[in-house]
Structure formats: structure tokens, C-alpha cells
Length: 248
Image (cartoon, rainbow, N blue to C red; front, side, top):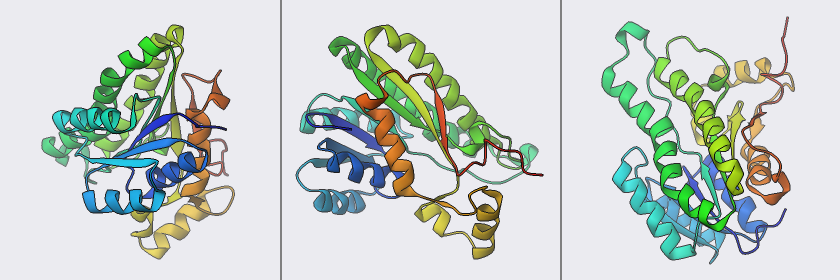
């Protein structure tokens, strides 16, 4: 894989999967712009990544902030060749009848509307240039139900439909769109869970362990690169076998 001369924008990029993917892209010769809410973490990440990395702070659930960040990315680092829409939120756990409207709205804004807004803004430029790659982060909840977290599950199911619809529209113009589905990946969010919860996740994974952010980043880089030039409209799980097996 070679990203020389390519500019990749990553949302949710200050930590975890987004940050690991930024590391991988820069190592492969690319330029990256990191978008997330916390400016201090973004500034620190870019200092470590070097001159190939820029940043723009934004709450992606706010359309105006997101569009401004995308415009800043293009101004700082050139036309956007690839877009990794990785930002997400888990929302809250509650029975559906108790799930608050404002929480539902926030989860959909971050997990579903923000990829829609970003794609609608960036895709015309990719079409004009005749090339581009878009990747959206899904979830095990994109393929399976989960009791008590209706907003998250609904949003992550929906991003699969978004990716497939965009893939069909964009394919004649040389632009690809795919969805990556992380399993139980070691990120700050997962690290904050109690040890018994982590043990349960590892036990539920056929490989017997949780995954590393770098393992997800390797696959994300592949899907964003020309190495995946004939891959579009797909959902690819990086989950140690959770979705691919039936454990009895």
C-alpha cells in the first residue's frame, strides 16, 4: 500500500482506531488531517506524527462545525483523496420506552448524520477528480441487535445502508465507499470497562482475545488505498470471528 501524494481525512482521530489509522497512513507516505473535539489531543497527535499531519477541532454532530473542519482540512493539506468517517458515540443504555429523545437525536447526529453530511460535502470533489475512497466505521451492532441501546443499534445499522447507497452512486465515477466493522477492540473506551466485562468480551471472541487498534488500522488503510480498488459497497468485520461463527 502506498499513500504517497494522498490526503486522508479521519474523524474521531485523536485516540483509538482513528489515531492508529493516522499512524499507519503517515507510515505509508500519506498526509492526514485529524478531526475530533479535543484540540489538545489533536495537537499532541500531530506533533508526534510530524509535518504530514494537520488537525481541525470539531464536534462532528454539529453540521456547521464539521463542514468548517472539512474545508480547513482541504485548505491545509490539499484536496481530500480519502475520507475515514470513524467518529461515533455510544449513547445511553435504557429500555426503548425510557430512551430519551435528546439522546436518540445526539446518537443519530454523530453516528449517522455526520457521515452523511461529510460525504455530501466531499463526494462532489472526488467525482470531479475521478477518484476517491470513503470508509465508515460500523459496529457489531450494525449486524446484530443489542437490548437497551436502541439509538446506537439503529444508527449503526443505518450506516451500512448509507455506505451501500453511496457506493452505488459513486462507482461510475471512480469513487468507492465501504464500511468497516470493529469487534471488541482495545481503545480508551474499552479500557474504561471493568475487567470482568473485558474478560466476557474476550471469551465471546473465537480467537479468545480482544483486538488491537493497530489491527483495525491495517484493514482500514487497505480499504482506503488503491490496493482495494475493486472493493466497494462492502462491510468487512475485524472482530476475531464474532460475526462469522455460531458458538454453541
